[in-house]
Length: 635
Image (cartoon, rainbow, N blue to C red):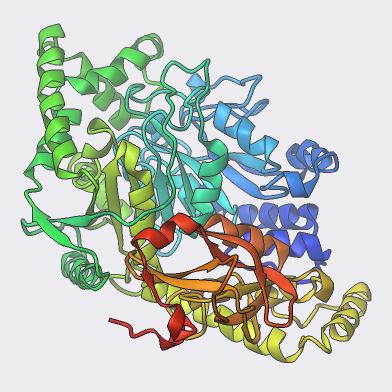
């Protein structure tokens, strides 16, 4: 029996805190995941499910890794079964196609080197051809929230594995929307990086020139953590390219469709209502909005399956299909064979390429310094409805996704307010390949305003206040923790709430005190980020009288503290404390010109805290005279 209940929604931060405190071991977590996968076997999530025997080498390897140098130490992840994991069959959803690779795909290798544990291989629409999650001889993957509905594809099992608590994050692939549609239908974040920024070596191609490896997780920040490890050129991968991600920055504007968005499926009115609610929230983000003609994107999307680009799938798989009659799923084989149509000759390919190049130019002009926002899906279907009409239902699921890779865009799908009970709704943000930093900040702003996230983080804040603020105050924490550890050692179940327990069991002397001076203070928008990281408010404080305070011209406005050689003033602060794992996540989220350094307090002591690079003062308003952000008039 483990010392604490493992929550259904797994996260990097919670697991790392639990490991650091000694509350859990990776073996404990993997045993729980194996049990969950077995219990959900009827949902057809896995093709090669996790087992303790197959995971033993990865557990043994952790002993040789220093958690301080392995940012994903002990973090379990799932892998779509068209991505290679050494020693595990890659089927691409077709048993006759299966082979057993000797090496990991490049992205898997990078994650394993960072300490992550590949659990097994997840189900998918065969050969990554589909957006519904039903096109697999290994069974239809059930939706994580409502099993009668589709899960989305083709990365169906990868999304449901995360949503059902089988993994912290998972890898999918995305050619026409497969890394975004399943995210929306299972209430997850789906991050699709720019083409080539993550290597595709070791990935079974769908359309090699358009394929991306993607990540599903419960939070945007965890997808970005995975991105920071997976990103980077692979000199042995012909599709790999250098696409560095810059520091997050708000876009100059959001682009929304001026045409009415069309919805489909049995929940049309509920999806329409959810989209209108998302539009209202977008309009409240204090970002300029431009309503644009969406025909450009729908016209580009039509090239993928309504033109010769479908022949790229046939080029990669024709040899196997012709040599193995009847081996492929019937719907999949029909789609693949459509790429061999006589009208798709060489001339038609070049005609489509030239047309697409013109669309790319238009998109580049439109989205320069901007982010496009659309519904991820305009609806969904029951699995029975897809069985009855497998082609048009699948086509509908790609209405607002298919254009993305053709136009060389990056994208992130994030949850919005639900369309109905257990009926998630999400939006996707798109940007030019080199503008992932704009995409990230716009998505972060939207997510921070999400009612769903606010509800979750309010719950965490309440746990922090009750379980930590009361039971584990600065004076009593060590005594209380010692008692709970003694109870756990006797075999009894700990009474500590799991979300608070990991932080509570970090010794007081190892907690990191952080000084904040602006939007992270109580009552301001980013207080929810502190609560989400299970940070605890300690007290109000003041800096030494050596600081200049400026109002940075950002959206929203935020302060920057700059230490002065001469002069300056004392600035009002708040002191919070957080675990080392939370502190690492926290620092990774801070955009330039802000950073974390040492802040001198009024009593002469120093703590970690927000500092600002001096150059930022050139274009910023000097607000030192106010003595603190709370006294600055907010416009």
